[in-house]
Image 1 (cartoon, rainbow, N blue to C red):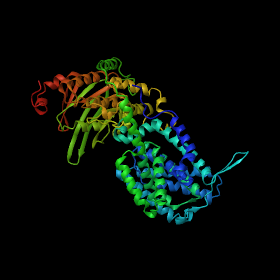
Image 2 (image 1 turned 60 degrees about the vertical axis):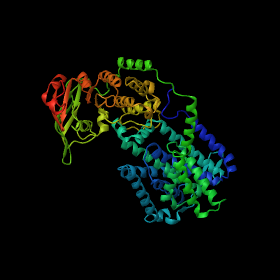
Image 3 (image 1 turned 30 degrees about the horizontal axis):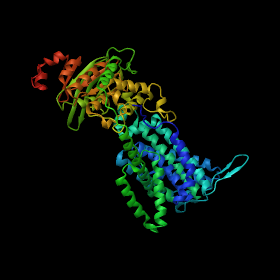
Length: 613
């Protein structure tokens, strides 16, 4: 199967966009579109590009984008009408910058919460901005009157002067701005940052666990969305020759959300399609149908119907139809079992290179936990645990359900903070760090319950983890494409071979069998190149044949790294482990070799009911 990229490559969509913008004035007027409507469609389409990056790609639903729309627009309008600035382009640029700075500051407050709480904070922020514009700053913004007299741009080319007026010349100017905005947005989507934003939308917890600074990436896209809003606000003032106070209203944000949903989230072109439908129906309902103020009621009903029957928007529905039609003509061939075994054998023979985190000296303890205690109110999940793992060791942690094993792993990987105690990894005290920091140091884990990026393919999942290894916890490299990063593709391919998923690289995670998902869970952790890998019940739910293959996998990945495994399969544990730690009621019951554990009376009575021979 040909390799499918995470996002479309090349400049064909950009060229198609430019062509569409070029021919639109010759086609759309026959459908009843007038220049003013088309210009507004482009303004809101540009406004929506930033919102789609924020919500469609990252999953952050903001109802406060009007705050940045109005901020950028009013700042540019103020410079051009009252501050004496003559360059409209410079005014738009400065308005965009101020909106981005405002977004950066607001992000410190809004991004402290997630989900509905984040959305509600953005609503409150938009209302605050609307009040400030209409009251304390009314002398600057014009209050309820807005700022009239915003000039149109004029370009001096030396040999001639181009004056932008209303109508089609204004369309040309705004179309160029829209095209630039689209090109930049598509580059962001194709960049490593774009990949990580999608991962955050699907599973922010796992994105952090493989080594990405989720909070910083959220803040970055929040600023980008604010910048797009600011530029669109400035263009609205230039288009109308007047900056209206309605730019700050909640209605503006609500309209943006509905237009993007109608067009299709996560498409970048969805906001433009949604704005086209919205503004055309608005004009049609008010004009030919003569509904007057009732147009909002009719448009609201239409919106509900579109959302109910086209849940992924207009572009999403078109994509679904295209996929359905192509799927009938190209059924995916079934995997050849012999080829699968061959891939596994190659992976076992050529394991991943030793971890980049490994130190030159690999003797002595790699991890030391002392006095580890975790209390939840009156419940003691882990109590005063001392735990030391040597470099290159394969350690097992066993215990009955409720013994505190998973909580203990969360403490070791800094997913949760201990009530007391210290953790030292590679000679460094990591107590109080977060899961992203310790993953970057070379300590990570797989999860007992699969934590995958379910809406992406196997290749895309492994790419997300490999990017953290390649780039560190945060980097704003939006200029280069992911495919150009050296070593990432090779690392993904090698990891897939090691977990026997090469033949499934371009299959969606949702289509994988359970055993394949468990192997991918291990592969995500492995792709970060850890020097210490913690595996939480890697064999859980697998068939006997899958367990045999996974045991081989675990043995093969030991080279260059240390493993600590929680597992209930005693046969596998006694076959693999060098030492075993038994937890019981949140405390270490006993520790020793497999032979010592098998013969220990306390283990037989307290954990195995006396049946272990």
